[in-house]
Image 1 (spheres, rainbow, N blue to C red):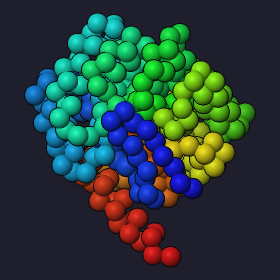
Image 2 (cartoon, rainbow, N blue to C red; image 1 turned 90 degrees about the vertical axis):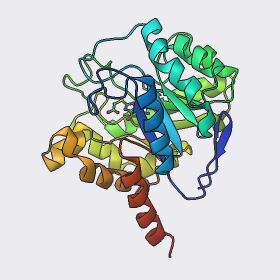
Image 3 (tube, helix red, strand yellow; image 1 turned 120 degrees about the vertical axis):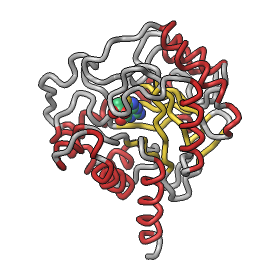
Length: 279
Ligand code: 7PJ
C-alpha cells in the first residue's frame, strides 16, 4: 500500500521503508532518561546525535504523560519547548511536537514545527482549529481515559475493534473539519489505558489497523512497561526488548517508530528490511 504523509516542510513517501522518530524529552521528570536533557544545549546535541544516527524525525515533548506525572502549565510547556523548536530549525529534519494543548500547538506551528503529535487525538476544544490552517503532519493517538487514571483497570470488549473505531472517528472528524487526509498518521497508543495483553493484541493488529484506515501507522513502544512485562527488566535494560517490539511493528506495516535508541533501531530495521525486500 503506497502511503504519503505531508509534514510541514517535508513529505514522506516511505517507499516501503520505516522512519525512525527520535524522542527528545525536554521535561525535568521524564521517566526513562531522567530529565537529563532539559537544558537547551543538551537538547540540541542530543537531537544532532539522533539525526546523525539516522532519525528521520525528532519528537519534542515538554510534558511527561507517565501515569502520575505532574501536569504542566501552558507557559511552562512553552518555556521548555519553544527554544528547542527555534534551535533545531536548521537540522533539516522534521520537528514533531508531542502536545495535547491547542495553545502550544499554535505557538510551535508559528515557530516552524512540522508535525503535531497529540496523545489525546486532537479532542481538546480548539485543537482542530489550532492545526487546520497549516500543512503540518498530525499524529492521532488512541488513549482510554487520561494519564492520571488510565492504568487503573483499563477495559475493552474488543480492544482492536475499539481502537480502530476511535481512530476512524477522529480521522473523520478531522477531514470533515477541512484537514487533508495526507497530513494524518494514526497510532494505537501503547500503554495509554491498556493492559499488557491489550498492548500485544494491538501490536499484532497493526496490519489490520493500517488496512482498515489506509493511513500510515506510528508505533511507540520504546522502553515501555509492555516490554518490561515480557523481558522482566527495568526501564534502563529494555533496549533489546524494544528493538524486538520495533521490528514486530515494522513487520506489521508500521511506517514510523518512535524510539529513544535511534542508532540501534535504525540498524535493526535496516537488517530486517534488507531481508524482507528479497522476495
Ligand atoms: C507515545 C507518544 C506513543 C505517540 C508518548 C513514552 C510516553 N506519542 N508520546 N505514541 N508515548 N504518538 O514515550 O513512554 O506511544 S510519551
